Image 1: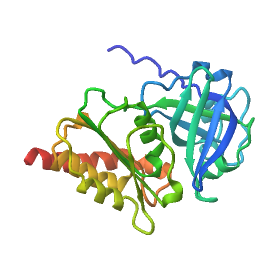
Image 2 (image 1 turned 135 degrees about the vertical axis):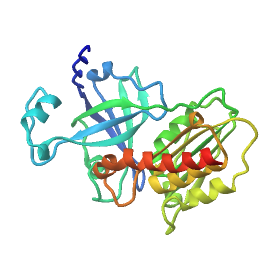
Image 3 (image 1 turned 180 degrees about the vertical axis):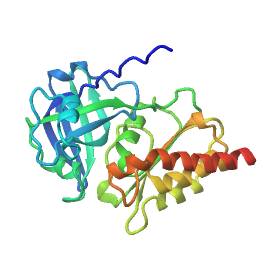
Image 4 (image 1 turned 60 degrees about the vertical axis):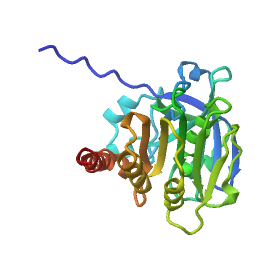
Length: 281
């Protein structure tokens, strides 16, 4: 039996912070740039994402930065920590990568970093990943998400041709978090207030009168409401799996490390439960 080829080491991208901007009270924009981004591209999917690498455990890494060497020589607690963020915009001419971060004071790792980072600081990241772009052959589009999905939803809306039929629902904490999106689609901003995360989205999608024809849907955000909407779309409405981009970006009570460690099992269990319901229907 032929041996598998050795896994090619993944090389992180290196960039510098060009500028930052506070878009809303809880959304911070960071623009990265630099000549090393000439080998980077993020122009095929509207949900492209990158994994930022943050030093941890007081570690100082040798130069040139080599992730494989770090993982081989440093104790695990000093390996860089990854945080995943959607590409809000990519300009291949200026070599500028725009990322938007949800910020809640000193909570978390990436949010406080984004709120305080200064132009000129070096940033390393892996990627891009991504799998979704609005299907031009669909009759209409459904885009649903909380703050974590806002960058991807905004990018998808801006990619839609004028006159495209689409329904977009974005849940945010309050009216101060609304953003300008360059699209003729009217976004329905759902102000959560004191309600549980995802509850306004569930109510809105359940109340929607679905247009005729084939829908292409993008539903992302907190895992529990995503699960409920997957039940509605995939099971109750029998929308084919290939017409759904639907997954939890995060889960209440878990940081990214904990959620990523359990996400595959969570998704497999939910899919098995719901697909079993579909098969038995």
